Length: 146
Image: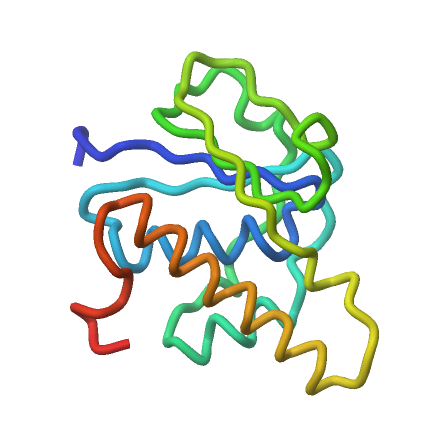
């Protein structure tokens, strides 16, 4: 377990995108990676994020939003920001980790009826699966029948 790479997913609110990314990486690649998430202005985890992850059999209902301050002093091998805002708007994590920036829309900001909102969460979830798959060098979920 000690050789797993530590990955931190960052988003301003740590309520949807970064939470889904944390759940996806830990679920599919927990043998090789240990995922965490945090934000500069943490808000409660979005219930729709929990719902669309459950559709894949991934339970993130026990995850909670965390402030960057909680992770101060920890080392990460990779830090991934998932904010749609310019990189400068997202929280910066001060360490020598490799850094990636994924420009994803915030599904919590989408207007519309419930099905339109869920559809946006699902699109973001699928894009996160694709990006994480690229990150680890294979298609996420294929080996697990997803």
